[in-house]
Image: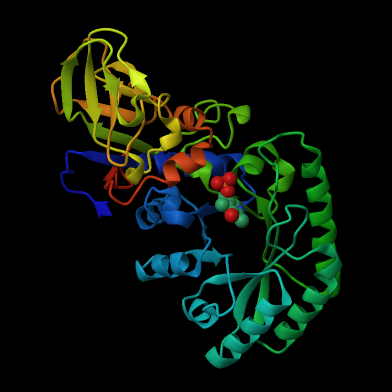
Length: 387
Ligand SMILES: *Cc1c(COP(=O)(O)O)cnc(C)c1O
């Protein structure tokens, strides 16, 4: 949901597009020789794909990246230009739509190359293909043993005018653990697989391997293009790499809710389903009107932090589908008082990383899972504004 008018009072995710543009500029400065791809898969990690993609292009990103074809086509339907690479394909494509929408496709295997050839012949135009190498992640990509055949077939299709091999690429397994031995091993394998393809006659426009953590920690992995997702949204890929501020990044999403109720209760009162929390004495309870249907992780029951009326509170008892409770320790803020679950930290609010730790997950998941029932409200929308 995309709104710019006055938001509803229950809850909202404010998306600061000036922060996003500043992150793009900061990232470009760190990889000056590489082009920047703004990875906007999964609705831009929950931030809203079209507004974020547009802001990233305004700030100097040349490429957009998506997982599914539908995500890529939605960018074109919104009128966005710039290069788009889409990498998560299953039999049936739709490859022809990608060719006609000017979307670059990733190919890891012969079945995909064959479908691309057929679609290009039907479309009467070549497909732009990035051949993906599995250099050690063990997920998508072509194994080194199968690479010569994939390269040969791609060159044959290129000779037939059905594909243009514009990219050679791979993806890291452990870039968020600097020094992990797989990093050097994957880089070495990538260099060898690129060298082989080039010896055979592939002339790639871009060779690319770096996600956000590799982009931030490993300049030798920048090659011609860096694919940044999480850093674009102002979050650190891992606490091991530092906080967003340490990395010069500005968190883009602030999740707010409106306090629905504050009431006095006696000591010994059970709170929420299962009575996993009992008031230690007479106190006040506050009702926060968001729950797991909104993407608030139920695993953060009893641990998630919230800033209410300038004070940090903790989820009391279980997070339910639509709401949870905090112990306000005797304070009685007015209903409608703003509760901030996470944001930039500018007002003392928790960070997405704090919720990740409370729920035993990563900050990526915290922002990406915020539900469609929470309106995204865009602030600092115009490129001239400075956040
Ligand atoms: C999601 C993804 C990225 C971006 O990863 P971040 O760690 O968020 O920067 C890059 N490349 C591929 C293939 C991805 O799936």
